Length: 44
Image 1 (cartoon, rainbow, N blue to C red):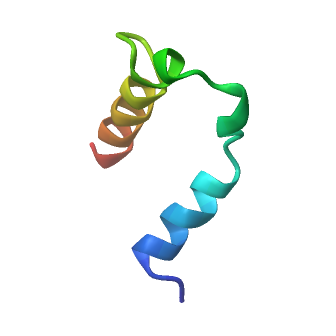
Image 2: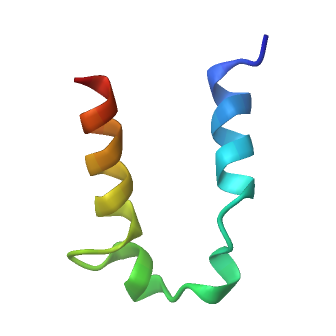
């Protein structure tokens, strides 16, 4: 069974970061906010 780190690495491998700007990742409605929101939703 895969560890949590291995599962996360597999998920991150599927994101094409090359086509994202730093702003698209970190801005108010960027990737980090979306991912955090989805993680919180799944946890609840």
